[in-house]
Image 1 (cartoon, rainbow, N blue to C red):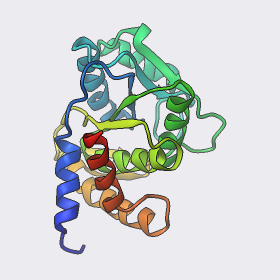
Image 2 (image 1 turned 30 degrees about the horizontal axis):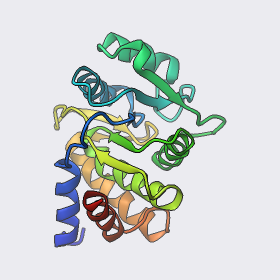
Image 3 (image 1 turned 180 degrees about the vertical axis):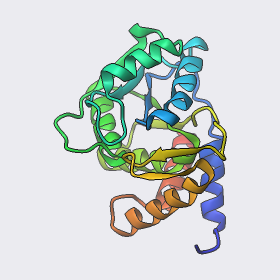
Image 4 (image 1 turned 135 degrees about the vertical axis):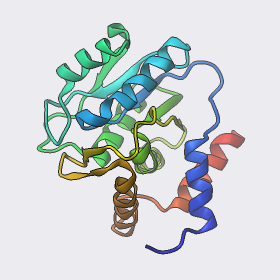
Length: 210
């Protein structure tokens, strides 16, 4: 893997230490995680609701697929984790054969735009956060550039625990999955699915100046 550039380091630091939006954001979208990693986003969601930082938390409406336990089971697990049932709302993503980060980002921004959202938080397991946030900013810049999105990484979990990820196909420690995520960012950027890091950084600078 190539040596990290100052731009890559700056973006990563800003994603993991993003500024807090003033007041209460419209919602936080929780990226679908495999079962071993879902507690990370559930804890973050509970904390955001308890602190009055978001009005609601959003999840995919998909049935169980691609490592995601499905919206019905996800709702139940979130409630068991302390997230108020009435705060949970589903983003339409069906029908789809698979569920992946790009689909989630695109459909979530469509959902937010249709409802006139101003501010949205992006929540994923920490090793997945960079790709999730880049995917959301890519969708924002292509669909609704006025929307302000903010990074809010999920609760850290043991880095040396072996878990599944990426439609349930990848298996390794969370620390090892970081390299896999970086490969996907580079690949999808080269293929044009993701905007380059420079565009994401410029979005953040513009957002914070507005």
